[in-house]
Image (cartoon, rainbow, N blue to C red):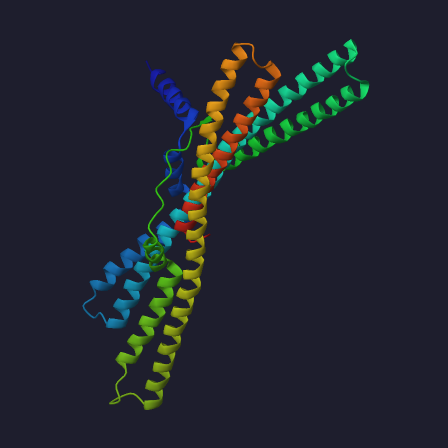
Length: 326
């Protein structure tokens, strides 16, 4: 009986390591080092704000600074999570694309192998030449090299994803992608950007310093200098917001382009699937050769790869927008 629990836990661990879906992969973002560090800062900033607000001798500048620190820590934590998820999405989609690339390379290898067999048969029956055989052999060698490269690429993609999310043995297909957000979302994301928030906070703090100065106890020169600093801080915040706004607009345009491309490739895949089904019927009826059907299968896998890449591009563009391009 004492062995039952360890065996159960072992089986459970193996079962959990077998399959990985995108939702489970994204949940691993909280374990990434930058997210852990950002969470620690957020917790400390919140605790500090609680202590500051409880101080009976609290001054306005101290309160504003504590509130600003907590708000900035929250924004940095949110960005750290999105950036970690962005990295995971990139690695996850690369695995799926690499898997299709391996299938494509294997199908091309199958066709090249069959091509060499046909070239050899034609040479023997006098309808082909030795040059045809050598060319077919070269195509087969190239196909083998491509298959090896595809397999190596998949191994690297798997290693990259495992470094982010841990052990797994299979990766599930991507779910339906999120809908294209409204253009107004760009302004919302810009407002939550920590760089923008920090720039705005500098302007608010500089303006507060001006408010706290009074001619009754502060020299006019000091008040003018404080106002100048406030104006500079406000101008700096506007410039940062302008530059990041252009960046977010570009990211949104990339997402729009990815959305259009995804629709095109999904339609092309549907057409390729229909062609594959029709050619299978023609093959069964003896209307086309097995080699011709292999070519149709190759075209279908090519359409699958294009659709997979388009879907991956959309997911990557979506999370890149959320992460502000980082």
